[in-house]
Image (cartoon, rainbow, N blue to C red; front, side, top):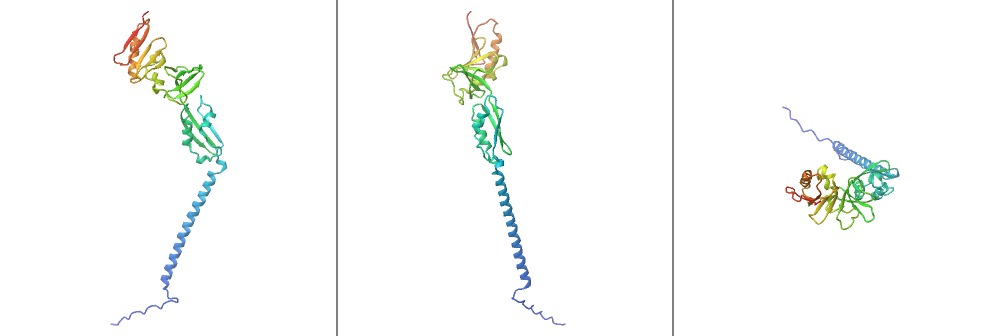
Length: 266
């Protein structure tokens, strides 16, 4: 049996560092260098991209050059542009379209507005106007129009066909205010068509004392504007049973299940 003697340690290289350790250190340094390079490349790309985006957004070529308006009939495009208050030369990409729409919708005639960017430099505003459903006669002979939701729209030379005249107000309402009660403006919507065609006026008295005036004479006492469908059906049923030559004073449908009628003596 031959004894195996331990191998003597390898002689230390010059400088006292094992070549394998030196290789590992070199690899680590190179890996760190590659990581730093990648980070620098990413940062540079972000900076360049941000700079390009900023230049594009702020470029005079993408400034607001024009504001176009569609959908207006009673309003003028200039009135909408003024309300929109879009600054000349504003950066189109950064324009707050929701705020512009909100400003336009503050106009009494505007039911809704949508705002769109049309690159390179146009803002398009599409307006849906309120439809006048009622009116109040003013002292100067003009009329003040009222939308279906009770919004007072503004003055006009005459009332549109089929609009309901509102009586009993103490003063002429101003544009932008709200009729009280608001539902009076579209009261006809709840009535049967044949009855609605005969109604020409609505009298707003004290709360609970609303009445409809018929074009051919007489009135329908509603009381409040609650249960208009039932009240309209009750009034229509009474009218159908009246003789053709009857002179109507009023039909009281404040309690629609128990309507009453009063005729004028001839």
